[in-house]
Length: 387
Image 1: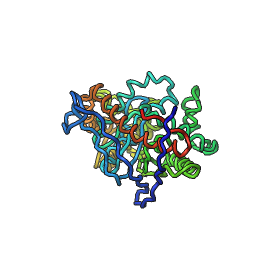
Image 2 (image 1 turned 180 degrees about the horizontal axis):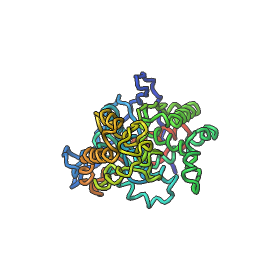
Image 3 (image 1 turned 120 degrees about the horizontal axis):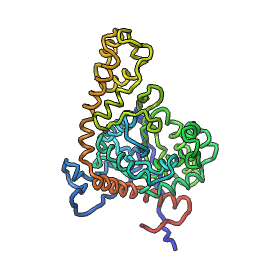
Image 4 (image 1 turned 90 degrees about the vertical axis):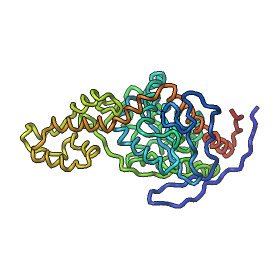
């Protein structure tokens, strides 16, 4: 028998638009803080040592709630950091942030979840090491919030097939994984929508290449609200200047699949080897020839790591610095920049990382449960018993 809980549907509020266009979320209960007396490795308290990491503190009610996630498909690399995580760290100062490790999404291209266990730990530890603060953000594992899967199913019931077919990234992903073109890969955007809507995210930090996905989520939310009841806000894009970070080959976007990465928390010798393997200016066969910084992948990275990058570009044009020396300088600058990340990463034990992830997942699930009570009530399904 099911216990039916009749709850009034909370109407989505109308919100003011700022220069970054986002919707402020409806006022709703903040995530419940869990846990009692602390033990060694507890998340409670204000200790700066990561062995007693502070627990997440809910943001004030009128903050915009944002959400983003990353798949645990391999080593955390420079493209992940510059393209996403660096921005996530900065957003913690302004928004109520929900960040998740997307292990459901990883199954679309790697069906064996057992292979992802170590990768989940590595990605979580790397995110914490580079600055994702469990006290200011909810950091959780996607599969620890099973309500996401239920909402994905219900959203698929109101989403026309043609809407998903027009999303451009499916064909690109299918080319990368021709032996595993599955329905989950095709309906990937619906799962993305459930990730956002389950926590009633008002904003999503995206680059221009993800706008089509987010627009689909907005349309699905609008369709659900019209069909049943106004449960969901329509999430807006927090457009960020996401840089296109090319890999060490200088041709393709930095990718674990391609194998052209520079690791952020790798050992210094590994980073040196990765940087020294970078392809440089193919139009400069000799050190005495003038360089072409705009064509050089190594010079492109100088923009990220040197405030005076124009000076080095000028030296390159005048043949006053060679490609070998440029790579050597870049490698040492990267190693020094990432030193605090490596040190923080070394302090994170599996027990502590798992505890942070477990507690963040419970906080996220508390929000998801409340959302699904509203969703089930709107659709006309019996509300499940509290679990």
